[in-house]
Image (cartoon, rainbow, N blue to C red; front, side):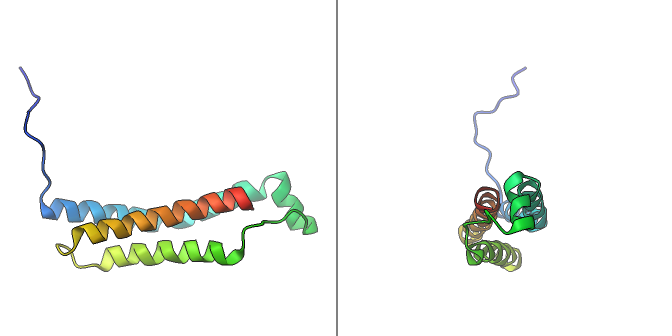
Length: 114
């Protein structure tokens, strides 16, 4: 018995909206754990503990860049959540991509520069 179909699977508008909302909500819920775990990794290393104890070898990443990435991620996530469903689906999806991009960049900046 062949269970493979040759027809492509297409999602309905409602399924697309649920998918976008799910990714946006997941990003909002994972933002703080990403930040906390990144700082935990950084501060548990030699460079991070030296920065805490002696104020030496601290981050070269400016603080405003970290705050900017954090607030862009929060803003884009909330925008995608409150955006009316069924309208401008591609714009909502782009907002979710922006959200995830900002929070991954934030985690990378914390891990790399701190």
